[in-house]
Length: 504
Image (tube, rainbow, N blue to C red; front, side, top):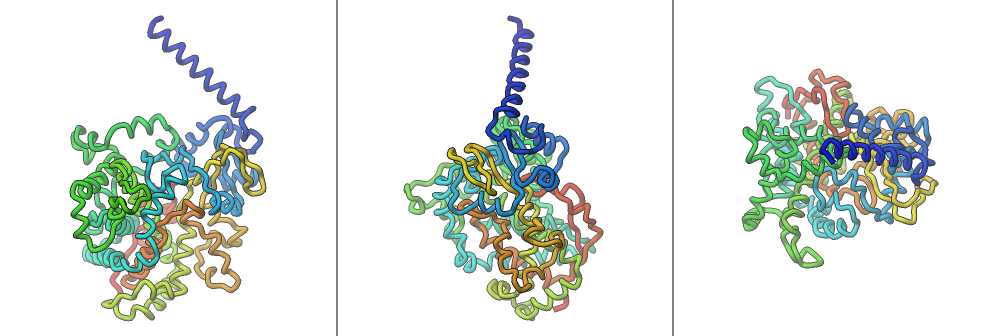
């Protein structure tokens, strides 16, 4: 048989197999009776078209789809999205130790980080190793490290003011959170806060790499091919790699370099004044099996912690500052409240002092409610099936709900759900709102960096509002529109602000 004949036979078989899959998905699949767009139930290509070709954030369209189809919408042959906020607590309940969906959690190309372990038992063992250094007490003991980076952030902003330039707050906040999580991970930072205009190579590479994630999520074959090539090899063989290499390879290579410094000479950790993630991960006594993970596992952990730790908190700071700067009255009230615990700029308050401020706390909570998170954190229903939102869901189905759909539920937050209004947290009878604030997810797989995140938020908000007179520099609501790329990607002009040093 000639090569052309073989090709035609293969093409015919692929077409037949594709037709058979569509036929099965529409008429025989266990989820066939759940409503949703016909193409979404027939083929995963519907999601790929929306997220990759059209570059849309599916979570935004899902608001309309839930109005049309009801509380449960089938968005791919084997995936359901839920619109009722009660379903979030059904899926991410502390008693439900369901597997994570590989379709989402294999996207970053790592298999053994805390956030990407598919099996609960694997994640539980790693969490037991790392939780002690993320405890409330541990973070309080290390708050001086967060204050140090916040002070460096303020210093860099002050220097930029000399050039009469406004500040790109997206890159500024990501530099602050990147240096902080690098300090907790490796014991040193990359000094992103010192980079001109906060444009450190790692910051730029991480931001640019976000655009590739929808492709990697929707096309596993492309993902597998890309991750089969070691990033270090790409950076060595590609001419002018710093400019030409795909951003994802640059990010992985830069983090790999940081890891190698630690692993090639673990004694360097002895000079660090605090316990880091790798102090714990390189200690056999921290594990039940008394053995340290291999090099791949250590890299995976560092990679996922840095990506998760740098973006989420920075994006919360970004949205919070965008909304507070649009309310000068709120900025003035926050400044007045901060002065009560921070009367002199030369003497910083403690984290406990900041946590006791009701309006600052309410503003941070409202900022977390506006966190740009449209990804559906999918879980796999166990073989026996489960009841979610009052409906029986067959075993093996991927189920999830975007945090955005909880935080923008008018049923929970009222008709002013789209208004940034910290005052809602201070009103009588609103104590149960905390139950619906889920930026770190919920259940046994929720983010264990929550205490560090809160410390970063309190200290950064306090630093920016107390040290600077803030005003938006030309940024429009359209500039603040984001695209869900697992993390938020801002395709237009970032939030720019004038940050003039305040009088003490």
